[in-house]
Picture (cartoon, rainbow over the protein chains, first blue to last red):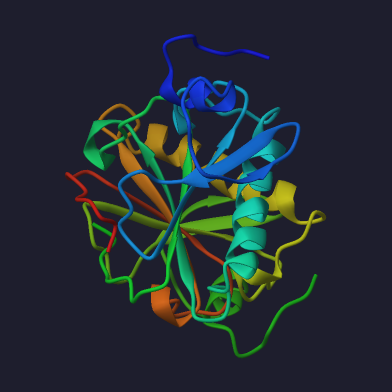
Length: 117
Length: 117
């Protein structure tokens, strides 16, 4: 599986950096954001090092869909499924992408305003 | 294919309500948001009427992944792929979900702030 030895998320996957892991399977891992912007703020990532949403393909579309499915399952587990939650992918500078390993933000536990940034 | 005769997005798919359609295939359609919050603000939806992200399953995960793939392709076409863009799903009240047919927001063409709402 492709990884990047300098990538902070690859280091979390490898347990070289600590995090509060909420979910893991062969392909995906989820952990709490270290700078949470809501009472629930989880990061969900593929273990495969894909830098940007710009880099996804038909071959990785199912993996990306499974990130959303894991988010849905975590929303239930964290009891925000009924009150509601927002899912966010950022790509490149205008969106403030800070780590170049694709990651889905799951935010909930408070009212989320519009527009989304 | 499941549809809801009262759903505004199902009516857009059926051409009963006009919209500026930017992409269409057998399973997915994309059109401009009628209340844009950025220079580029596109809505990407499955033709299948799925009410909430809470309702997605392993069987629909690929379809959801393909929504992201269509967003990526539209970002290239609309020339915001390099400058950046944000992708957003809202589920239920705390996120302000306004239409109960799952839809992905693609926003770009300006700096998007953090937190995302």
